[in-house]
Length: 108
Image (tube, rainbow, N blue to C red; front, side, top):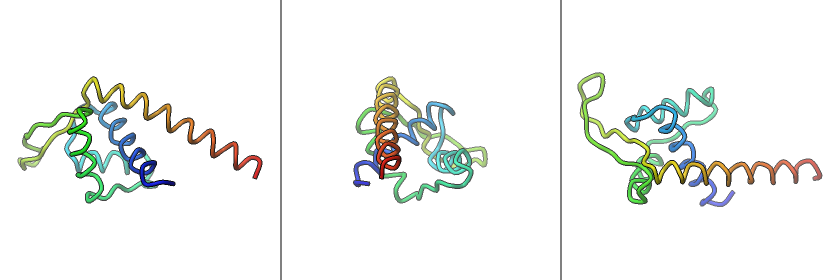
């Protein structure tokens, strides 16, 4: 897969996580993706935080500082209306990719 496809997949996972869970801090996003995928997917923090920054710059998510359950300061992220539209587009794009790969595998 091209780097853009992998980056787009991370975006899709993060946007879907925020869509399902509302507001989460970065580590909460990591835990959700890992848990929801039955430990098949692990997002490294070194990949997550640049992606969150880029998505915030694109207007797909917003953030604010708050305290965690353990009284630590953390940046919490939430989906914006523009992010919801991006999520829909990313899901459709991913579904097309999966359909294409399955078609090739069926006839390869």
